[in-house]
Length: 200
Image: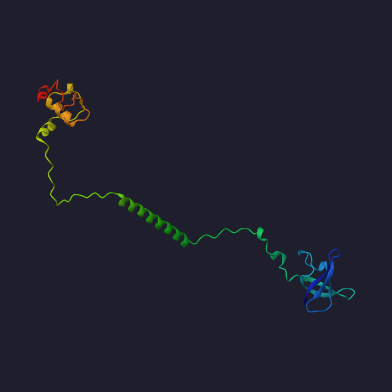
């Protein structure tokens, strides 16, 4: 029959001590050889389970001592620092999909807002009404119509490059950068082509 008790006395140097039964009774002698060899050293106050047998002198002694308050050495949990770290569990697929969908929606809203802002920033140009009659362009003066069909600004700027007074007058009136009116009276090439016009 097994009995439970507490180790109340222990002599580490001599390797023996005494156990006080929990249910009362005389202290029971215990030798270090009665403890499991793989366990830690006995310590005062620990709860023990044991059996009693008589020695050669017919005195009681504890044998087959176990430690019910302690887990078996092979089952004792390892310190937290020695435990291998488990990899973090992966997030569920539905959570990943919801995050991706949320990002896609946010990106779409941002792109649409940027597009709307650009469209509103543009100045609206009214298109001509197809049903409304178009006004005919104003006809140019008769004096200017004839030369336009005969000459064009082609880079000539001097009187020596002209062939007539009408041509010089056209270039002076319509072409930039010409050098044909030295006195600034509006009559070009007075010495070459438009000499008679200065007396008007």
